[in-house]
Each structure stands twice: as C-alpha cells, then as structure tokens.
Image (cartoon, rainbow, N blue to C red; front, side, top):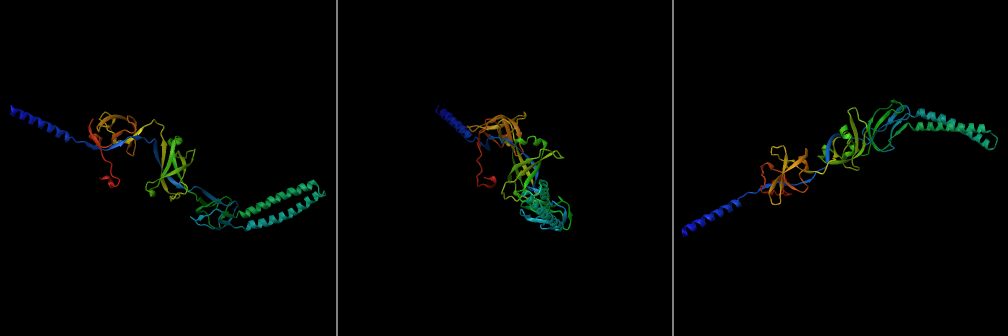
Length: 353
C-alpha cells in the first residue's frame, strides 16, 4: 500500500513540474508598438518652380538720340541713382540755348507790360496776352531743360544689370529699352498650378521651397500673387516671396520644388504607419490593438487614404492614444501575448542595438 502511495505522489510531482516548465517556457514575442496620432489634415502637392528676380525693368531714354556711353557691364551691381548710360547731349544743349534766349526776351517784355498795367497805362487785353505768352514760353523752356536732363539714364533702384541691349553709338528711339535691370531685393519664386489647384486656392495652408543644394531643407514662402487668368497651357502663375534677410544663396534662374500644403475639409481622423495594416483575405483592413494585459486583439478599421510617405489615414475604427502593433503583423494571432520592443538608444547609430 505504501509502495503504491509513493508511486502516485511521484507521478503527481512530475506532472506538476512538467506543467510548471511548460508555463515557464511560453515565449512572449517582442513587437514594435506605436501610439495612434491625429492625422495631418493637409495634402502636400509638389510643383516645379524657378527663382525669378523680384523686379525686372527695361531702362530706356524718354527722348530719341545717339547713345554716347554706357557706364555699366552685364552682371554689375548698381546703386539707386547711379548714372548707367548717357546720350549725346549736343542737340538738346543747342535747343535749350535757343529756347532760353526766347524765354528771357518774352519774360522781360511780359514783366514790362504787367508793370504798365499796374500803373493803369497798359490795357487789360495787353496784360492778358503778356501773361499767357509768359506761361507758354516758360513751359517750353522747362521742357527743353527736362529733355537735356533726360539725356542721362539713372538706376531706379539698387539692383543688377542683366543685359546691355545696345552699344554706342547706336541711335535709339524714345522708349527703346537700352538696359535690362533686375531688382536687388530678395528674389522671388514662380510656379504654375493647374485649374484643379487654382479653384482650391483658398484651401492652401502654406508654401515651402526645396532646393537641391540645401539637401532637402524646406524654406517657407509667402504668397505674393496668383494670376487670375490662365496661360496658353491652362496654368495659373503663382508668385512667392523668399524670407527677408535670408542667407539662402538663391539667384534668378535656379530651379526648385515648391510644396503646397492643402487643407482638407474632412472629419477628424487618425494617422498610423501603413505597415500596421493587414487583411484576412476578406478585402477588409485590420490592425492589432495592444491591450493593457499584454495581449493583442484584432480590430477592423476604415482606411481613408494611403500616403506615399508610408503612412495611412484612418477614418474609423481607431482613436488617438491607442497603441497598435506596427511591424510583423502577419505573424501574430488573436489573444497572443506580446511585449513592446525597446526603443533604440539615442547613441545607437544605425539602430543596431
């Protein structure tokens, strides 16, 4: 009897030990866990763009004549008010001398008649003729002086000479461009948007420029103007300003990519890594919810949009702050016990540890 009791107790002990070892060897899978965040409510559209001068003007003489000298070269920086070109002034100097002599003669005669009128010697008719004659010759004299002054061409603002269009001694007509001049202010960025974007222009949240030489750095831009009429290609010109006093060495002619952030008028949604999504062959989308007890549960979600950056916008099924599995989702099962994978150390280059 005692022998049978010993055998029974030994068997029970082995059974309990075996169960304990089985429980002890149950493996908990390490998985990458992420917290559900509110979705970015902006769509990003990208357009090719080009840096343009803030202002481009064509400098021209107001009068016709022979180009005598150009004082600047292509690419030169010029201060406002600096003399840039000069016309042969001889014809206008002679014209001024002749008009000045006529002016002095008529002025003297008019002053004599008006003095006599004050003494009640000259008639009112003579007074009026003298006064009108003086006004006419004065205007003619001022015009001759202005034309002589207009033989010199000055820079309207600080800027750069883009192109000298003529060389001396070319005869130029009044208003004919002689120099193409660029403003020295911060250059601007120009892009062209299609009608589909133009009709949504009030939904634009922001603009940012990306230059290759800045290695992906985004430069915020300020909207200056949207052309209300389309060009021959049915595109609308958009003019944007670079930041004031920027150290960015962007010059006219450079290429850039402009990112246009469009606000979305949609209900509140959340954003998750697209790698968290999986399907069971029923054309539905699911995620694994990480529960407080360390197990996971499958939940169906409604995907609003998949993005090129590897994220997905979820319209329904998830709430901000919930924790989900974001990698290896196809290897998991309902109710499986998992543990969050430790975050890589900040000093761990390459994420190897």
